[in-house]
Amino acid sequence: MERDDDMPGKILIPINTEQSVDKVLNELKFLNPLLLNSHITLLYVQTLVYNTAVGLDAVVVTPEVEPEGLRILERGRESLGKMKLCCQTALKTGNPVQEIVQYAAKERIDLIILCRREQGLLESLLFSNMSDELIEKAATNILVVK
Image 1 (spheres, rainbow, N blue to C red):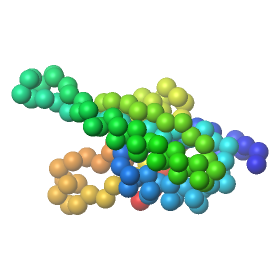
Image 2: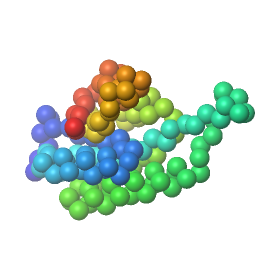
Image 3: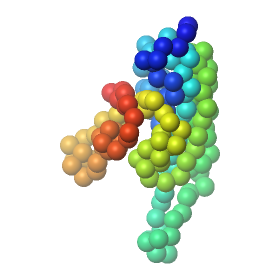
């Protein structure tokens, strides 16, 4: 299949749980023919944990987070391989929205595919939705998978 200029060349798929891997990859089955010539990156962002006992500026990355992120990325890579799609993976640490926006800009990503996590009423009132923040801040196209 030849590459069409209307098809995304570089695709970023941020994943943070095994459920998001399953959800996004299930949707990608329908897009598989369009993605065959795309460069796909799976991105896992470790969220920083602030240790308030030490001080507000003390950041602690828990040791179990990195292996979990690597395991989730590897599972995503294997799943894409079964679909005959190749990908690279990236592991970042920081604020997920900032890291995704920065990575997309630096790597000149054409499309970000997001898995929207369902929130309850109270949760949606208290916390912002990462998908909404990314739609607002990212300078690239975004596909949201419900």
